[in-house]
Image (cartoon, rainbow, N blue to C red; front, side, top):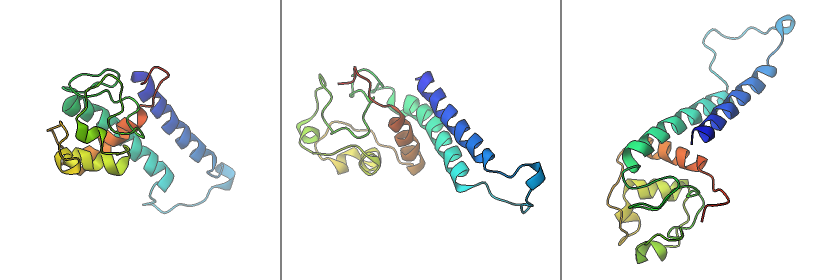
Length: 153
């Protein structure tokens, strides 16, 4: 997990460096307004990196009691959850409601799930929900970094 987080930071740093290459050199300096805002690309990369870091911490504190990234526990493992069909992790005993839902986990479905799993898929087994929208966004950003491996079912 540390390696994956480090990879995100390297990607953000490379994005920032490539943005710096587009700036004029000292002999071509342009005057920028005193209150110039960062470029949307840099700002979005910074926000995403912050969301991922916060999401990793929130995942550990809010989800970690029942879920693991790489092992089924009380809840199913989460590596590769983004883009996966709900109820499809091998060797996990899902509710019939979740298996039959046909849901594919993406930003919208994960957001609805985290807000209120029972309203989203009545009859499923998860009873925990998150009330803060920022927590949803951050956890989803973290879950998106958990790409499947060859060993992921």
